[in-house]
Image (tube, rainbow, N blue to C red):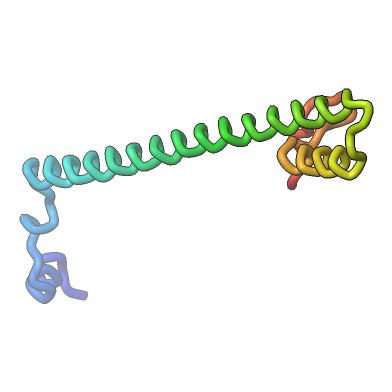
Length: 108
């Protein structure tokens, strides 16, 4: 079985090529930090988009609640319009548990 020197000679590698140098390590670390910074920026952008979408969703839910409440208080409100407003509210409201709180297990 050939020794390390024979294997290195056969593959064209030697110990100097295998042992990383300080500048090589530094360069690799700089590249990795740049990649991680870019990924962190992308994640932050996604988090911000999620927050904005959550705010929009909450605004739609509040408007839907207001519409239902307004229609429920009107004695001559159209029952079909009230029913439609309730259906729309249900589509933007989170599922509720038995005590009126959001159900964390819903949607699984």
